[in-house]
Amino acid sequence: MIGERIKLLRKEKDLTQSELGAILNVSKQSVSAYETDAVIPPSPIVNRMADYFCCTADYILCRTDQRNEIVVRDETYIIDGRRFTKEELLEKIRMAEYLAEYMEKVSKWKPGED
Image 1 (cartoon, one colour):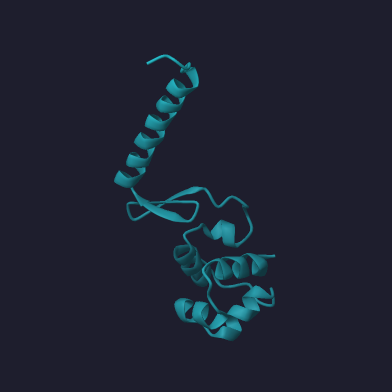
Image 2 (cartoon, rainbow, N blue to C red):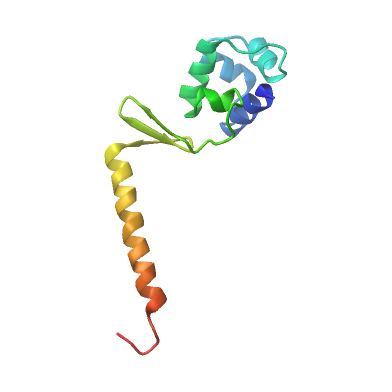
């Protein structure tokens, strides 16, 4: 089960087992063993995977199926695998608020009104 999750994350990044191994500083054979559930990756490797794939170790270890948890690392917010600074996140919130107000006005608009 953990192996399927690791394989899914690797394929989402379009990586080979060798390429992921190089990123994690392990062999291709180790990645293969993780993906086939022959070996559970040690916690330092899981942590490296979580950092690389922008998700939690709990997600990799199948303790949760939610990738959209907010994780804060080094002043960076990680939401659904995407990294944002605090400023970028605040800008997105402001834009969402603006769009919500705009949509409210549009929904109340009637043809012929200004």
